[in-house]
Amino acid sequence: MEIHKYEKWWMIFGTGTLIVFLIILGVSAFHGGTHPNNSKWTINYENVDQIEPFNNPGLHKVEGKDWDYEVVLVAQAFAYNPTEIEIPAGSKVRFIATTKDVIHGFEVAGTNINLMLEPGYVSEKITTLDKPGTYTIVCNEYCGSGHALMYSTLKVVDNNDNN
Ligand code: CUA
Image 1 (spheres, rainbow, N blue to C red):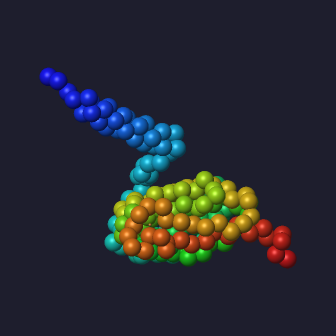
Image 2 (image 1 turned 180 degrees about the vertical axis):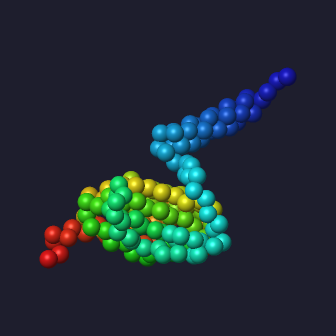
Image 3 (image 1 turned 120 degrees about the horizontal axis):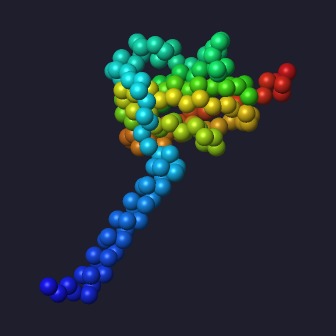
C-alpha cells in the first residue's frame, strides 16, 4: 500500500498533537494536581440548604480543632455564599465547599487554594492565610452564561493595623 507524501505528514502531525496533548494533560494532572477532588464526603445537592453545615454558610470560629476558623461555602450559578470572606491574618482555616447545581471552581487567586466544586460532593482545604491583602475568588470551571461574572472576595486582615 502506498501512502501519499502529504497524507503521511498529516498522519504524523495528527499523532504528534495527540501525544503533545496527552503529555500536557498528564503533567497538569499528576504534577500540577489538576483533577476532580477525591472527597469521600457526599451530599444531596438538591437539599444543600437544609444540610449541616451548609444551612449556615459563612465564617465560623471553632474551638478545640486543629484550625481556627471554618469557612462554609455554597456555590451556585453564578455566585458564592458568602459573597465576601474576612479572615484575620495568620489564621489556620478549613474551607468546606459544595455546589447546588453544576460544577464550579473556587480559586483564590495568588494562593494555593483551588478547589473544584462538584454537585453531590464536598470539597475541603485546610490552609494558613499569612499574607494580609484582598484576594479575588474566581470560578475557574465554565458553568454557563454568567461564568465570567462569578467571583467574590477574600480579605486577609492584619488586626494590628486596624486599631
Ligand atoms: Cu461558576 Cu464558572
